[in-house]
Length: 155
Image (cartoon, rainbow, N blue to C red; front, top):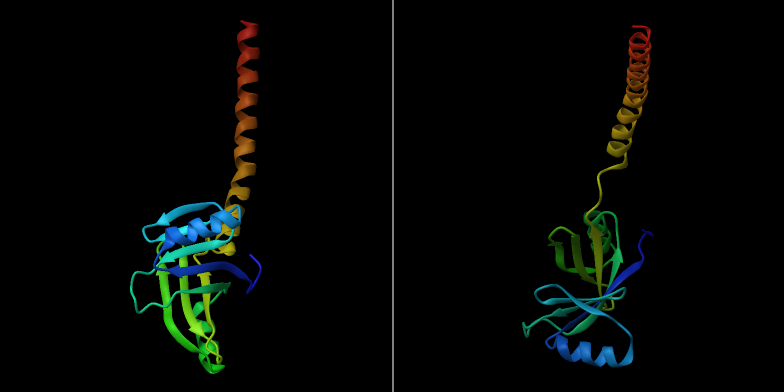
């Protein structure tokens, strides 16, 4: 995954079906329910159903980050304001919503990651070490079978 690119656009609305109908007439987007209250737009982003009148309707771009905590520290140090800090999307990752000094709302997204490469490499090394022993054992079995067949042929 490229570092720090906009990877998802989210429409916050109180009427998701109206937006799906509107954008469906204009673009060839495909929609699917990801979870209650959230519709995925395949390859583009999503539509968030925000029935709370206090939640503004807006479009929010989400930028990929590798360390959400560090990114939040940088946002505050640079003069930004955190609105929602490290919210979990179960099984997928975490997001933070913030605004820049001009008030533009941006999201940052830290996906849940796969196991560390070191752990994967360690498992691969163990398997590689076992492979020669397994190969030798297989060859020994073949040799024993041939030897037994020869003995049977002599009798």
